[in-house]
Length: 169
Image (tube, rainbow, N blue to C red; front, side):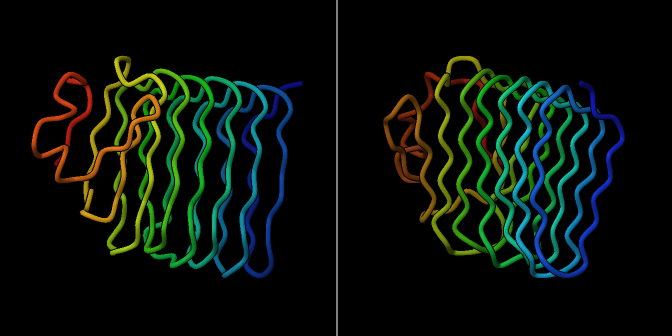
């Protein structure tokens, strides 16, 4: 089954949803403090997830294209598990300890780790197949490439230079 242009808006309380078929242009907005918990079990195109004060937990089991996450104002964590290709991700995280797992190829994507001093963790399972730019990567944050952890200091020292598709702004 195919899901197209589904919109879910929550002003109070939490949102929990599972999309089993290909999903195109879903918009999930949380205007309050509730948690957003979403699973996409197939290809997802044009997903938009935003929260004002709540946490976001989302998993993407299929190829994911043109995804926008806006959580810049929340003090709750954002946890994303993207199992396959991410093509065109624009992720703006919030003020909590966030966790992103990228299991496949990454193309034309941007991650803003948020205005905070909390430890964010980004795992990239296939770092030779990525085009990704990070902003606000701080000393507390950790980048995990193929199981090996790198801190900001190690990145500045050039220890990930072999992964030319990973850049920092």
